[in-house]
Length: 338
Image (cartoon, rainbow, N blue to C red; front, side, top):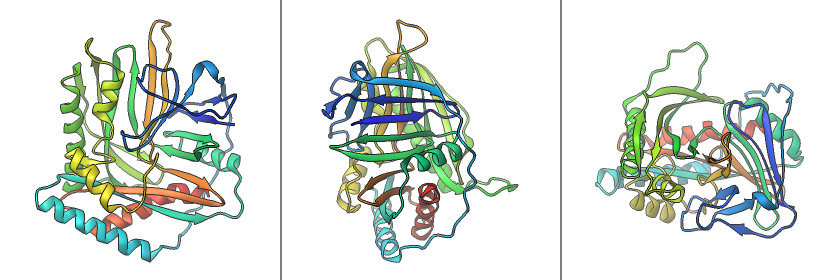
């Protein structure tokens, strides 16, 4: 039967929706209540687990501490050549003026002979405490799980917060973090996009200073953004304005999406889409709350095969070889727990 179980960043409580039948329900107005699982392509339907039909559980769970070895993984060189070629093509497009930035991703298939879903979920919960960690299953769609560091949107009543998250480097203990101009520019592009999109539908917009955050073995640049939704606006308008952000798609959004669809050579499906609570009751009974996260550091499990999805933002200063190495680093999040 369909279900989702999840833990929000830096929380101890785990929540779950268990559905009574295998009927597929979809979101149309974003006024629905429940748990949403939306694809990268906003033209495709977002799946809903309706709150009224679900058995909802919420409890504090103690998770064992796991020490995951930093294993050296074998690199698939045929995949590397294809990814490097696509990145080089993207850099050419950017230099020609068709794009400012585009996010190029790839799918990596891993055969798993001994798959214990609960054990893997516990490892994700233990290892990635500041991520949104989930398992999502529907018999007509498939099994997905992940640990994403990126918030798309938190909204309570009319007050909201979101973030721009871009730029990546490996975490090295006791080392001073230095960001290069490529990562700083990439981050600024995402922040500017969010500000420009929200300025017409929100008031009291506040943009915090950019900070460095850790997600597993990686570091990212993050800028928090908050504000209040205008009376004339609504949640659907806000989601359509933000998703997909330049952190998972690119700029201009339409051109970047076209480039991705034409050149990535696989269907992203729910990778780099979003998921989370939709219009659930908040602390104040009168106010609905939505808590949505971008579906990164995730994988799909099918017939003893894990599909791991990883990508990176390409700008005019990108180096194709370095971009490949970044995807290798990001793939370790899921590989280590497998």
